[in-house]
View 1: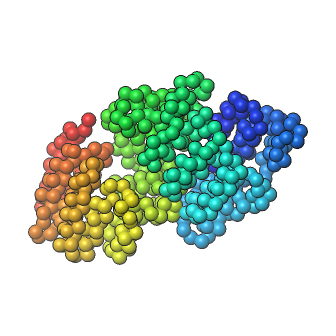
View 2: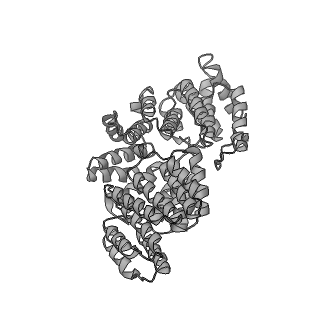
View 3: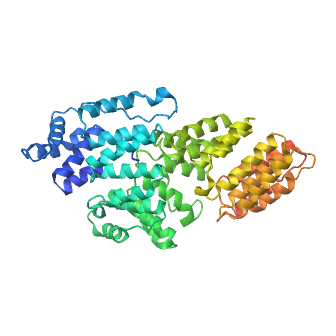
Length: 491
């Protein structure tokens, strides 16, 4: 779901290329929302000059632009930290947005703003209703269509998200909507309908590179998934000519697979003039083992996109696994669960925090909420490992061993070998103080598994495990040899 504080460059370009009532209306609405009313002066003059043809509501908005006033004030949409408390749900922002809608009930962007405010508070049914009204009012407005599709993606209604994009009039002529159709199709594991049109838009020369960045990124990802690395590299490079926060983040996520770890092919995030590069910045700092910066960027990413589970996942994982800050991990997991109550990674992070701090019943309660059948392939192993942790901390050693062994078995079939690696490492740590400990053998197996695993945090985290196991037992590991072995396996 798009953040309401949006850039109006693209809608201004559309107006300049297509001087019609609908494009003028898009620009005027976007300018009023962003506060940049000067950008819509020409479009407003156009609307006012058309006598009675434009809708009365649009004409009123045009007069407001020409008067130099952006009133009535929109609901402030400064990023907020979601909470499940009743005071938060009756927030001033929602009240203000609803008052504005009583005055301007046909303002589609105001309805989408309200949907955003509901979504970040986890009130999905009201967000869905507001987004549906916005779509009914402006079914061809790019901002509305993309925002509604993003919300439907968030609530796992992928087929509906595809449908509203594909039903948008002339979507195949708009690079932003074609990019969205391809991206949502990839998420839904469907075949995109608009691939041919996408390449045509890229090659036609009618759009600036800023307007083609997300499209190049989506096609690059599509080619990468199909095994066409050379085409993928070309398209990802093009997406970075003038990227936005989404295309830059995607380039960062995919670059190590395309060019290898620490490749110079992708410039650093700071070289791009982007307003909110937090997702890309978090991943780049993670690659460089700059944990503090990665954590700061992930918090800014969460602040910017509080409706998304991914920044909460990233921040909570860093808090628990890098900084050993279980209290913060717990807070961040709860924060993410407000908008993504079924997210397995957040539930596992929360269960882990509870288990490590002696609250076994709460940990078991969170684990019981997870539905692994519809989750990522690592989740079943993660659940078993956390059951093992709860059992060990509760003194039930045999049950703990059984669950950890089951976690390792389930991890064997997962392509990402980090799953098996960290299941073994956590098991080794729980065994370390036992009289009949198998900790040394388990950790040695973890080190062997590390040779098959990729992850920028693996050397750091394994060194931490080795240190903790050494403190709990008489065994000492040669950390220099361990880290050299792991790093030598990286491409």
